[in-house]
Image (cartoon, rainbow, N blue to C red; front, top):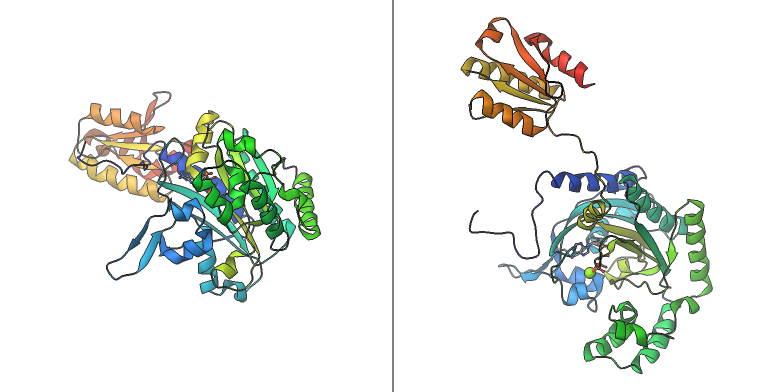
Length: 420
Ligand code: ATP
Ligand code: MG
């Protein structure tokens, strides 16, 4: 062990488990790639003001969890705590909303940073795959996003997840509700910090996990009763489209989510095998965000799914992804001449798309065969001077133990046929 360890709240993805992370990213992005979403990648850090404006000063993410710093040149930056603000910033900067069809549909995959109290499923560095559909207000778009996330989770074999759905209203009806809620909350017995929250972000109080707070919330005005007709009709249509698509969801009128920019449709995917860090992903509509960061009015919707928690969910359900062994063929040379010949064959096999590895380091046969076994390879090629003199190598089937000589120039085709 070295003197160094991964920083608190972080961990390394190492084989073989790391393969699950790649598979989860692939599974989440596949339905997006299949539905008109283009790949976008933005920097790992941004102007800190993008997040304080875009995510909101009153959120935990900005007020407590952000890695903000000043560079030697005096720039005030922050490691990105989430993806939406950056993606919208990039889309606006590149004028994507003017260049082609709306909505602009984008997907991303990357690392995010939040200074949180580390615990199972909650880290300071984690990864998300996300989707954003920018510039269109259409209930079918909200439904599409939820359907694609549902499809992604199902394709991984996950079953113990639930979709929670709510509407947060819009700039017409939410302010009226906000005031009604504030009036109710101000009469409760709450600590200083929560009282402050009533004034800056009262909806978040509904999200308070403490039982004594939850008990006092009985009888609080509910947003559902304040939704304007347009928001009601919009929400009904999202629900109808989901039902028609066979997507099962639960109405959760207390679902508010931590970010300021959400309007109307809001949803969360929760997994029942994860204990208290149960949210595997979430998202919704954010019609006001573009204007908050200085852009034109661009009603939009999106989601982000947490890769770390999705992997934990797979483990909780005992799902094996059936990821094939990374190596199909392992080459074991006996002697210097065989080393040169087999190394050449390894390159040829790889060019033919066959996952191949080589016994590096010139160890003896026994050690090399042990490595071949550990690699999970189905076939081993062994060759010494006598084989080469005959223009052949020994091809060993690691499952049956059978071994046969194969001519050098027939090796690639033979292995290909056997693996097919
Ligand atoms: P939570 O309520 O668990 O704090 P959140 O509302 O802060 O979640 P979002 O900002 O919506 O989460 O991020 C979307 C997803 O990213 C979450 O559902 C979760 O899977 C993942 N995620 C968020 N924060 C973390 C973290 N600190 N560690 C691991 N995954 C995270
Ligand atoms: Mg959080």
